[in-house]
Image (spheres, rainbow, N blue to C red):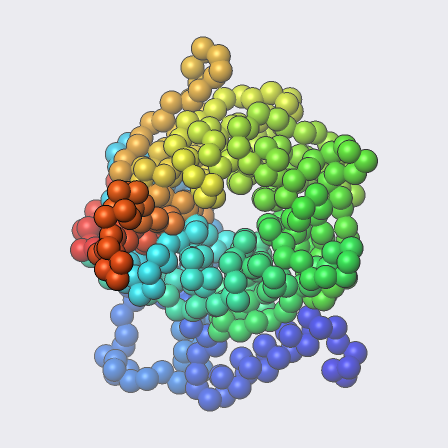
Length: 483
Protein backbone atom coordinates (compact mmCIF):
# COMPACT_ATOMS: atom_id res chain seq x y z
CA UNK A 1 0.00 0.00 0.00
CA UNK A 2 2.77 2.41 0.90
CA UNK A 3 4.46 1.82 -2.44
CA UNK A 4 1.44 3.31 -4.15
CA UNK A 5 1.58 6.53 -2.15
CA UNK A 6 3.21 9.66 -3.48
CA UNK A 7 6.09 11.29 -1.63
CA UNK A 8 3.71 13.78 -0.02
CA UNK A 9 1.36 10.94 0.94
CA UNK A 10 4.19 9.13 2.71
CA UNK A 11 5.07 12.31 4.59
CA UNK A 12 1.45 12.72 5.72
CA UNK A 13 1.29 9.05 6.72
CA UNK A 14 4.47 9.39 8.77
CA UNK A 15 3.09 12.52 10.44
CA UNK A 16 -0.15 10.73 11.34
CA UNK A 17 1.77 7.75 12.72
CA UNK A 18 4.02 10.04 14.74
CA UNK A 19 0.98 11.86 16.13
CA UNK A 20 -0.77 8.60 17.05
CA UNK A 21 2.37 7.29 18.78
CA UNK A 22 2.66 10.49 20.79
CA UNK A 23 -0.99 10.28 21.84
CA UNK A 24 -0.58 6.66 22.93
CA UNK A 25 2.43 7.66 25.02
CA UNK A 26 0.44 10.47 26.66
CA UNK A 27 2.42 13.23 24.94
CA UNK A 28 1.19 16.31 23.16
CA UNK A 29 1.24 16.40 19.38
CA UNK A 30 3.90 19.09 19.19
CA UNK A 31 5.28 22.20 20.91
CA UNK A 32 4.28 24.79 18.36
CA UNK A 33 0.99 26.43 17.39
CA UNK A 34 -0.73 25.42 20.63
CA UNK A 35 -3.86 27.45 21.40
CA UNK A 36 -4.66 27.96 25.09
CA UNK A 37 -8.23 28.32 26.30
CA UNK A 38 -9.71 31.79 25.83
CA UNK A 39 -10.79 34.05 28.71
CA UNK A 40 -8.42 32.48 31.22
CA UNK A 41 -10.36 29.29 32.01
CA UNK A 42 -9.26 27.88 35.35
CA UNK A 43 -8.47 24.25 36.17
CA UNK A 44 -10.79 22.19 38.32
CA UNK A 45 -9.71 22.10 41.97
CA UNK A 46 -9.66 18.30 41.96
CA UNK A 47 -7.32 18.11 38.96
CA UNK A 48 -5.10 21.15 39.61
CA UNK A 49 -1.41 20.27 39.73
CA UNK A 50 -1.88 16.89 38.05
CA UNK A 51 -0.36 16.11 34.67
CA UNK A 52 -3.15 15.57 32.11
CA UNK A 53 -3.30 12.34 30.17
CA UNK A 54 -2.93 12.20 26.42
CA UNK A 55 -6.70 12.06 25.88
CA UNK A 56 -7.31 14.95 28.30
CA UNK A 57 -4.61 17.05 26.65
CA UNK A 58 -6.04 16.35 23.20
CA UNK A 59 -9.57 17.16 24.42
CA UNK A 60 -8.40 20.44 25.95
CA UNK A 61 -6.50 21.32 22.82
CA UNK A 62 -9.51 20.66 20.58
CA UNK A 63 -11.81 22.63 22.92
CA UNK A 64 -9.39 25.54 22.90
CA UNK A 65 -9.21 25.52 19.11
CA UNK A 66 -13.00 25.46 18.84
CA UNK A 67 -13.26 28.34 21.32
CA UNK A 68 -10.65 30.29 19.39
CA UNK A 69 -12.31 29.70 16.00
CA UNK A 70 -15.73 30.54 17.45
CA UNK A 71 -14.28 33.74 18.86
CA UNK A 72 -12.83 34.64 15.47
CA UNK A 73 -16.18 34.07 13.76
CA UNK A 74 -18.12 36.02 16.36
CA UNK A 75 -15.52 38.76 16.37
CA UNK A 76 -16.14 39.28 12.65
CA UNK A 77 -19.91 39.41 13.06
CA UNK A 78 -20.08 41.41 16.30
CA UNK A 79 -19.36 45.12 15.89
CA UNK A 80 -20.02 46.23 19.49
CA UNK A 81 -18.80 45.12 22.86
CA UNK A 82 -17.14 46.21 26.05
CA UNK A 83 -13.67 47.67 25.75
CA UNK A 84 -11.87 44.84 27.49
CA UNK A 85 -11.61 42.55 24.48
CA UNK A 86 -13.52 39.75 26.25
CA UNK A 87 -17.05 38.35 26.22
CA UNK A 88 -19.88 40.84 25.72
CA UNK A 89 -23.30 40.78 27.41
CA UNK A 90 -24.62 38.96 24.34
CA UNK A 91 -22.21 36.10 24.95
CA UNK A 92 -20.04 36.80 21.89
CA UNK A 93 -16.31 37.41 21.86
CA UNK A 94 -15.26 40.90 20.80
CA UNK A 95 -11.90 41.64 19.19
CA UNK A 96 -10.78 45.29 19.39
CA UNK A 97 -9.90 46.95 16.09
CA UNK A 98 -6.59 48.58 15.24
CA UNK A 99 -6.43 52.12 16.59
CA UNK A 100 -3.51 54.41 15.76
CA UNK A 101 -4.80 57.60 17.35
CA UNK A 102 -1.79 57.28 19.65
CA UNK A 103 1.45 55.34 19.63
CA UNK A 104 1.12 51.58 20.32
CA UNK A 105 2.24 50.25 23.69
CA UNK A 106 5.06 47.76 23.98
CA UNK A 107 3.60 44.47 25.21
CA UNK A 108 6.48 42.00 25.19
CA UNK A 109 9.27 40.76 22.97
CA UNK A 110 12.28 38.53 22.58
CA UNK A 111 15.72 39.99 23.34
CA UNK A 112 17.86 37.33 25.02
CA UNK A 113 17.31 34.89 22.14
CA UNK A 114 19.26 37.09 19.69
CA UNK A 115 22.05 38.18 22.05
CA UNK A 116 23.70 34.77 22.33
CA UNK A 117 25.36 35.07 18.91
CA UNK A 118 27.22 38.26 17.87
CA UNK A 119 25.54 40.34 15.17
CA UNK A 120 22.47 38.10 15.10
CA UNK A 121 20.09 40.66 13.62
CA UNK A 122 16.58 39.72 12.49
CA UNK A 123 15.34 39.60 8.89
CA UNK A 124 11.61 40.08 9.23
CA UNK A 125 8.70 38.37 10.99
CA UNK A 126 5.40 36.87 9.76
CA UNK A 127 2.24 35.95 11.65
CA UNK A 128 0.70 32.57 10.90
CA UNK A 129 -2.51 32.76 8.83
CA UNK A 130 -4.58 31.69 11.84
CA UNK A 131 -2.75 34.07 14.18
CA UNK A 132 -1.66 31.46 16.73
CA UNK A 133 2.09 31.80 16.24
CA UNK A 134 4.80 34.01 14.76
CA UNK A 135 7.70 33.10 12.45
CA UNK A 136 11.04 34.95 12.37
CA UNK A 137 14.27 34.79 10.38
CA UNK A 138 17.67 35.94 11.61
CA UNK A 139 21.31 36.18 10.60
CA UNK A 140 22.22 32.87 12.24
CA UNK A 141 20.27 31.14 9.43
CA UNK A 142 17.59 29.90 11.83
CA UNK A 143 13.81 30.11 11.57
CA UNK A 144 12.04 30.46 14.93
CA UNK A 145 8.40 30.01 15.84
CA UNK A 146 6.85 31.83 18.80
CA UNK A 147 3.44 31.04 20.23
CA UNK A 148 1.00 33.86 20.86
CA UNK A 149 1.54 34.82 24.55
CA UNK A 150 -0.87 32.86 26.72
CA UNK A 151 -1.66 35.97 28.78
CA UNK A 152 -3.58 37.41 25.83
CA UNK A 153 -6.20 34.68 26.11
CA UNK A 154 -7.16 35.75 29.64
CA UNK A 155 -9.97 38.16 30.46
CA UNK A 156 -7.53 40.50 32.22
CA UNK A 157 -3.78 40.76 31.75
CA UNK A 158 -1.04 43.17 32.67
CA UNK A 159 2.68 42.47 32.34
CA UNK A 160 3.50 39.80 29.76
CA UNK A 161 6.65 37.71 30.16
CA UNK A 162 9.44 37.79 27.59
CA UNK A 163 8.78 35.47 24.67
CA UNK A 164 10.86 32.38 23.95
CA UNK A 165 10.73 30.36 20.73
CA UNK A 166 9.07 26.96 20.87
CA UNK A 167 10.79 25.77 17.69
CA UNK A 168 14.08 26.45 15.92
CA UNK A 169 14.67 25.26 12.35
CA UNK A 170 18.27 25.74 11.17
CA UNK A 171 19.21 26.09 7.51
CA UNK A 172 22.68 25.40 6.15
CA UNK A 173 23.31 28.86 4.73
CA UNK A 174 21.82 32.32 4.29
CA UNK A 175 18.02 32.19 4.13
CA UNK A 176 16.72 34.06 1.09
CA UNK A 177 12.99 33.83 1.75
CA UNK A 178 10.39 32.00 3.86
CA UNK A 179 6.59 31.81 3.98
CA UNK A 180 3.65 30.13 5.71
CA UNK A 181 1.29 27.69 4.05
CA UNK A 182 -1.75 29.96 3.41
CA UNK A 183 -4.34 27.44 4.70
CA UNK A 184 -2.44 26.83 7.94
CA UNK A 185 -4.79 25.93 10.82
CA UNK A 186 -3.55 24.74 14.20
CA UNK A 187 -6.48 22.33 14.53
CA UNK A 188 -5.19 20.45 11.46
CA UNK A 189 -1.51 19.44 11.87
CA UNK A 190 -1.23 18.50 8.19
CA UNK A 191 -1.59 22.19 7.24
CA UNK A 192 0.97 23.50 9.74
CA UNK A 193 4.16 23.95 7.74
CA UNK A 194 6.44 26.65 6.39
CA UNK A 195 8.68 26.80 3.33
CA UNK A 196 12.15 28.30 3.21
CA UNK A 197 14.90 28.80 0.63
CA UNK A 198 18.59 29.20 1.41
CA UNK A 199 21.82 29.55 -0.54
CA UNK A 200 23.04 26.37 -2.28
CA UNK A 201 20.15 24.35 -0.85
CA UNK A 202 16.83 23.04 -2.12
CA UNK A 203 13.55 24.52 -0.95
CA UNK A 204 12.68 23.01 2.41
CA UNK A 205 9.23 22.45 3.92
CA UNK A 206 9.29 22.40 7.74
CA UNK A 207 6.75 20.92 10.14
CA UNK A 208 5.50 23.77 12.35
CA UNK A 209 4.50 21.34 15.12
CA UNK A 210 7.78 19.54 15.70
CA UNK A 211 10.33 21.35 13.48
CA UNK A 212 11.15 18.31 11.34
CA UNK A 213 11.85 18.51 7.62
CA UNK A 214 8.74 17.29 5.81
CA UNK A 215 9.66 17.64 2.12
CA UNK A 216 12.04 19.28 -0.35
CA UNK A 217 11.60 20.91 -3.74
CA UNK A 218 14.76 20.77 -5.84
CA UNK A 219 15.06 23.32 -8.66
CA UNK A 220 17.78 22.77 -11.28
CA UNK A 221 19.14 25.15 -13.88
CA UNK A 222 19.88 24.47 -17.57
CA UNK A 223 23.19 22.82 -16.58
CA UNK A 224 21.35 20.41 -14.28
CA UNK A 225 22.86 22.12 -11.24
CA UNK A 226 20.90 22.70 -8.06
CA UNK A 227 20.01 26.38 -7.73
CA UNK A 228 18.45 28.26 -4.83
CA UNK A 229 15.22 30.25 -5.08
CA UNK A 230 15.41 33.93 -4.14
CA UNK A 231 11.69 34.25 -3.34
CA UNK A 232 8.81 31.97 -2.38
CA UNK A 233 5.03 32.28 -2.36
CA UNK A 234 2.19 29.77 -2.18
CA UNK A 235 -0.93 30.32 -4.26
CA UNK A 236 -3.91 31.42 -2.13
CA UNK A 237 -5.40 27.91 -2.32
CA UNK A 238 -2.05 26.34 -1.37
CA UNK A 239 -2.01 24.07 -4.43
CA UNK A 240 1.20 25.47 -5.94
CA UNK A 241 4.46 27.00 -4.78
CA UNK A 242 5.89 29.79 -6.94
CA UNK A 243 9.66 30.39 -6.73
CA UNK A 244 11.66 33.33 -8.09
CA UNK A 245 15.02 33.00 -9.87
CA UNK A 246 17.10 35.07 -12.28
CA UNK A 247 14.72 35.93 -15.16
CA UNK A 248 12.64 32.90 -14.23
CA UNK A 249 9.70 31.74 -12.11
CA UNK A 250 9.39 28.03 -11.37
CA UNK A 251 6.08 26.53 -10.25
CA UNK A 252 5.96 23.39 -8.08
CA UNK A 253 2.91 21.32 -7.23
CA UNK A 254 2.63 21.40 -3.45
CA UNK A 255 1.45 17.78 -3.32
CA UNK A 256 4.46 16.52 -5.34
CA UNK A 257 7.84 17.31 -3.75
CA UNK A 258 10.89 16.69 -5.91
CA UNK A 259 12.31 18.30 -9.03
CA UNK A 260 9.30 18.32 -11.35
CA UNK A 261 8.22 21.91 -11.99
CA UNK A 262 6.93 24.33 -14.61
CA UNK A 263 9.36 26.94 -15.95
CA UNK A 264 8.02 30.43 -16.67
CA UNK A 265 10.70 32.74 -18.10
CA UNK A 266 10.15 36.43 -17.39
CA UNK A 267 12.73 37.60 -19.94
CA UNK A 268 13.13 36.17 -23.43
CA UNK A 269 14.45 37.53 -26.73
CA UNK A 270 15.60 40.71 -24.98
CA UNK A 271 12.06 41.48 -23.88
CA UNK A 272 10.26 41.21 -20.58
CA UNK A 273 11.33 41.52 -16.98
CA UNK A 274 15.04 41.04 -16.35
CA UNK A 275 16.91 40.58 -13.10
CA UNK A 276 16.38 38.33 -10.09
CA UNK A 277 12.76 37.90 -9.03
CA UNK A 278 13.02 39.10 -5.43
CA UNK A 279 9.37 38.87 -4.38
CA UNK A 280 6.13 37.22 -5.53
CA UNK A 281 2.63 38.22 -4.39
CA UNK A 282 -0.81 36.93 -5.40
CA UNK A 283 -3.93 39.04 -5.80
CA UNK A 284 -6.60 37.97 -3.29
CA UNK A 285 -9.45 38.61 -5.76
CA UNK A 286 -8.05 38.34 -9.32
CA UNK A 287 -6.28 35.45 -11.12
CA UNK A 288 -2.94 37.26 -11.37
CA UNK A 289 0.29 37.66 -9.47
CA UNK A 290 3.03 40.27 -9.22
CA UNK A 291 6.77 39.66 -9.55
CA UNK A 292 9.18 42.22 -8.13
CA UNK A 293 12.71 42.33 -9.52
CA UNK A 294 16.05 43.76 -8.52
CA UNK A 295 16.01 45.41 -11.95
CA UNK A 296 13.65 48.05 -10.42
CA UNK A 297 10.56 46.67 -12.17
CA UNK A 298 7.29 45.04 -11.12
CA UNK A 299 5.58 42.66 -13.55
CA UNK A 300 1.97 41.49 -13.53
CA UNK A 301 1.26 38.00 -14.87
CA UNK A 302 -1.75 35.74 -15.31
CA UNK A 303 -1.87 32.97 -12.75
CA UNK A 304 -2.92 30.17 -15.10
CA UNK A 305 -0.32 30.51 -17.85
CA UNK A 306 2.09 33.16 -16.60
CA UNK A 307 1.37 35.48 -19.55
CA UNK A 308 2.72 39.03 -18.98
CA UNK A 309 -0.05 41.57 -18.44
CA UNK A 310 1.74 44.81 -17.50
CA UNK A 311 5.13 46.19 -16.46
CA UNK A 312 5.25 48.83 -13.70
CA UNK A 313 8.19 51.25 -13.73
CA UNK A 314 8.99 53.95 -11.21
CA UNK A 315 11.29 52.66 -8.47
CA UNK A 316 14.79 54.02 -7.97
CA UNK A 317 16.15 50.84 -6.41
CA UNK A 318 15.64 47.12 -6.70
CA UNK A 319 12.13 46.18 -5.58
CA UNK A 320 12.20 43.90 -2.53
CA UNK A 321 8.59 43.71 -1.32
CA UNK A 322 5.11 43.75 -2.87
CA UNK A 323 1.70 43.65 -1.19
CA UNK A 324 -1.84 43.62 -2.57
CA UNK A 325 -4.66 45.41 -0.78
CA UNK A 326 -7.42 43.10 0.57
CA UNK A 327 -9.81 44.15 -2.21
CA UNK A 328 -7.18 43.45 -4.88
CA UNK A 329 -7.51 46.87 -6.52
CA UNK A 330 -4.18 48.29 -5.33
CA UNK A 331 -0.60 47.05 -5.24
CA UNK A 332 2.03 48.50 -2.89
CA UNK A 333 5.73 48.04 -3.72
CA UNK A 334 8.94 49.10 -1.99
CA UNK A 335 12.64 48.77 -2.80
CA UNK A 336 16.12 48.85 -1.33
CA UNK A 337 17.84 52.24 -1.08
CA UNK A 338 14.51 53.65 -2.28
CA UNK A 339 12.78 56.26 -0.12
CA UNK A 340 9.27 55.58 -1.43
CA UNK A 341 6.58 52.92 -1.23
CA UNK A 342 4.51 53.26 -4.42
CA UNK A 343 0.78 52.57 -4.69
CA UNK A 344 -0.50 51.29 -8.05
CA UNK A 345 -4.14 51.13 -9.15
CA UNK A 346 -4.45 47.86 -11.08
CA UNK A 347 -7.56 49.14 -12.83
CA UNK A 348 -5.25 51.68 -14.49
CA UNK A 349 -1.86 49.94 -14.46
CA UNK A 350 1.21 52.07 -15.04
CA UNK A 351 0.03 55.13 -13.10
CA UNK A 352 1.19 55.80 -9.55
CA UNK A 353 -1.74 56.70 -7.29
CA UNK A 354 0.46 58.08 -4.50
CA UNK A 355 3.74 57.45 -2.72
CA UNK A 356 4.62 56.85 0.93
CA UNK A 357 7.90 58.28 2.17
CA UNK A 358 10.26 56.25 4.35
CA UNK A 359 14.03 56.07 4.98
CA UNK A 360 15.82 53.06 3.46
CA UNK A 361 19.55 53.74 3.50
CA UNK A 362 20.84 50.19 2.92
CA UNK A 363 20.25 47.20 0.64
CA UNK A 364 18.39 45.42 3.42
CA UNK A 365 14.87 44.16 2.69
CA UNK A 366 12.33 46.17 4.71
CA UNK A 367 8.92 44.52 4.98
CA UNK A 368 5.71 46.53 5.30
CA UNK A 369 2.19 45.29 6.02
CA UNK A 370 -1.48 46.28 5.88
CA UNK A 371 -4.22 45.54 8.39
CA UNK A 372 -7.04 43.13 7.36
CA UNK A 373 -9.44 46.01 6.65
CA UNK A 374 -7.03 47.55 4.14
CA UNK A 375 -7.10 50.93 5.88
CA UNK A 376 -3.73 51.17 7.61
CA UNK A 377 -0.31 50.49 6.08
CA UNK A 378 2.75 50.30 8.36
CA UNK A 379 6.46 50.28 7.61
CA UNK A 380 9.68 50.63 9.53
CA UNK A 381 12.86 52.35 8.38
CA UNK A 382 16.59 52.27 8.99
CA UNK A 383 16.34 54.90 11.76
CA UNK A 384 14.18 52.76 14.05
CA UNK A 385 10.93 54.58 13.30
CA UNK A 386 7.59 52.93 12.53
CA UNK A 387 5.26 54.96 10.32
CA UNK A 388 1.50 54.53 9.93
CA UNK A 389 -0.50 55.75 6.92
CA UNK A 390 -4.27 55.85 6.47
CA UNK A 391 -4.71 54.78 2.84
CA UNK A 392 -8.32 56.01 2.80
CA UNK A 393 -7.22 59.62 3.18
CA UNK A 394 -6.65 61.71 0.03
CA UNK A 395 -3.00 62.42 -0.83
CA UNK A 396 -1.60 65.91 -1.39
CA UNK A 397 -2.67 67.55 -4.62
CA UNK A 398 0.83 68.69 -5.56
CA UNK A 399 2.50 66.26 -7.97
CA UNK A 400 3.84 63.79 -7.30
CA UNK A 401 0.99 62.82 -4.95
CA UNK A 402 2.28 61.89 -1.50
CA UNK A 403 0.26 60.47 1.37
CA UNK A 404 1.10 62.01 4.74
CA UNK A 405 1.46 59.68 7.75
CA UNK A 406 -1.03 59.81 10.60
CA UNK A 407 1.46 58.48 13.16
CA UNK A 408 5.19 57.99 13.52
CA UNK A 409 6.92 56.72 16.65
CA UNK A 410 10.40 55.63 17.69
CA UNK A 411 10.19 51.86 18.12
CA UNK A 412 13.89 50.95 18.63
CA UNK A 413 17.29 52.51 18.16
CA UNK A 414 18.11 50.37 15.16
CA UNK A 415 16.67 49.42 11.78
CA UNK A 416 13.08 48.10 11.84
CA UNK A 417 13.21 45.60 8.98
CA UNK A 418 10.09 43.57 9.71
CA UNK A 419 6.44 44.58 10.19
CA UNK A 420 3.58 42.09 10.53
CA UNK A 421 0.00 42.79 11.66
CA UNK A 422 -2.04 40.10 13.40
CA UNK A 423 -5.00 38.85 11.31
CA UNK A 424 -7.60 39.32 14.09
CA UNK A 425 -6.09 40.99 17.18
CA UNK A 426 -4.69 44.56 17.25
CA UNK A 427 -1.14 43.23 17.59
CA UNK A 428 1.86 44.59 15.72
CA UNK A 429 5.01 42.48 15.50
CA UNK A 430 8.26 44.24 14.62
CA UNK A 431 11.72 42.83 13.92
CA UNK A 432 14.86 44.95 14.21
CA UNK A 433 18.59 44.90 13.57
CA UNK A 434 21.06 45.28 10.74
CA UNK A 435 24.66 44.44 9.89
CA UNK A 436 27.16 46.58 11.78
CA UNK A 437 30.69 47.53 10.75
CA UNK A 438 33.47 48.76 13.11
CA UNK A 439 35.05 52.15 12.58
CA UNK A 440 37.93 52.12 10.11
CA UNK A 441 41.48 52.88 11.36
CA UNK A 442 42.99 56.20 10.42
CA UNK A 443 45.98 56.01 8.08
CA UNK A 444 48.06 57.94 10.61
CA UNK A 445 47.58 55.24 13.21
CA UNK A 446 49.08 52.62 10.89
CA UNK A 447 52.16 54.79 10.35
CA UNK A 448 52.66 55.35 14.07
CA UNK A 449 52.32 51.67 14.94
CA UNK A 450 55.71 50.17 15.72
CA UNK A 451 56.71 46.71 14.57
CA UNK A 452 55.55 44.05 17.02
CA UNK A 453 53.04 46.34 18.73
CA UNK A 454 49.30 46.11 18.29
CA UNK A 455 46.76 48.86 18.50
CA UNK A 456 43.79 48.21 20.79
CA UNK A 457 40.94 46.64 18.85
CA UNK A 458 38.04 48.90 17.96
CA UNK A 459 34.78 48.08 19.78
CA UNK A 460 32.20 46.40 17.59
CA UNK A 461 28.99 48.45 17.34
CA UNK A 462 26.08 46.94 19.26
CA UNK A 463 22.72 46.68 17.53
CA UNK A 464 19.19 46.32 18.83
CA UNK A 465 18.40 42.82 17.59
CA UNK A 466 14.96 41.99 18.92
CA UNK A 467 11.42 40.89 18.23
CA UNK A 468 8.73 43.11 19.77
CA UNK A 469 4.96 42.90 20.14
CA UNK A 470 2.91 46.11 20.31
CA UNK A 471 -0.70 46.54 21.42
CA UNK A 472 -2.40 48.82 18.86
CA UNK A 473 -5.71 49.57 20.56
CA UNK A 474 -7.09 51.71 23.38
CA UNK A 475 -9.41 48.88 24.47
CA UNK A 476 -7.01 47.38 27.01
CA UNK A 477 -4.16 48.77 29.03
CA UNK A 478 -0.84 46.96 29.36
CA UNK A 479 2.28 47.46 31.39
CA UNK A 480 5.54 47.95 29.56
CA UNK A 481 7.97 45.05 30.11
CA UNK A 482 11.54 45.58 31.21
CA UNK A 483 13.81 45.05 28.21
